[in-house]
Length: 138
Image (tube, rainbow, N blue to C red; front, side, top):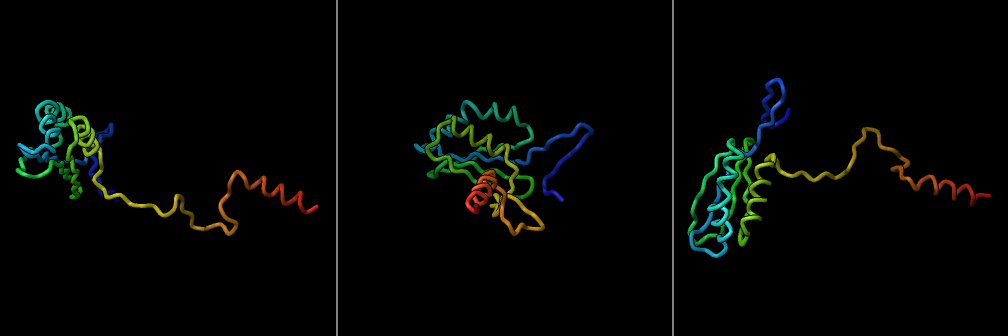
């Protein structure tokens, strides 16, 4: 069973997994300059385009700025935006909005089979090798 929340109303509907986004910044810090500019000019566009996400703004004096995203499945992700400009922050905010909130899982193999081959994996060069072996036998 999937851990994602999905709602279908006949046509199918996607529920964004990001439920809360907290923008944290310092009022006077130089590393928060881009975050302050993003808050002045662009955060209202994000709020209007994503009404399902609760957006909080929190001041953290003497600290570097960061984004904290909390997802419906209970996971959270913290993204440092130290010395980012407003464009880079917008890109990170949109990336958080579009994430599923699941942790990344490294796949050890690109494929899976219940009955592995003893001969090995087929490659397009395999036929050429077989031709060369036949030619060398004579």
